Image 1 (tube, one colour):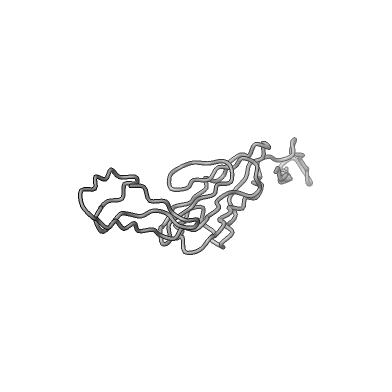
Image 2: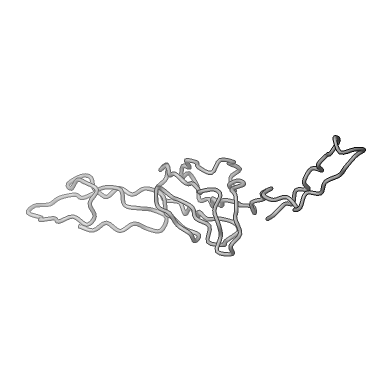
Length: 157
């Protein structure tokens, strides 16, 4: 017996004269029998990153690097996350900023109650990693009063 779901639904289980969630299932008919199939609503969920430069995201433990589309059963809960920081295919280091649903942590649990897109937005990582060299010296007054100027920090993207 094979149960086929209509668009927007997924097979859940057989009931009535046949039990279980396997689909298809073997069936031998020796007398009249009623077979029922239960279906659940599914929602199309999109998960990805912006900018689309090969940044990695994780859905239910599976790591992906291109936009993904999933058909999740209504009411099911799923884990989505992004590692941060990470380097894109463009060679730029990026840090996580926020999700399209407003969440500001790189890991979240989402429940499929309607079709949604979950896009993780990243921004280029800014670091203060170097000072201009050499550090000039400035002499004020005499030999016993030597001051060093503070280095001028340069932002690298």
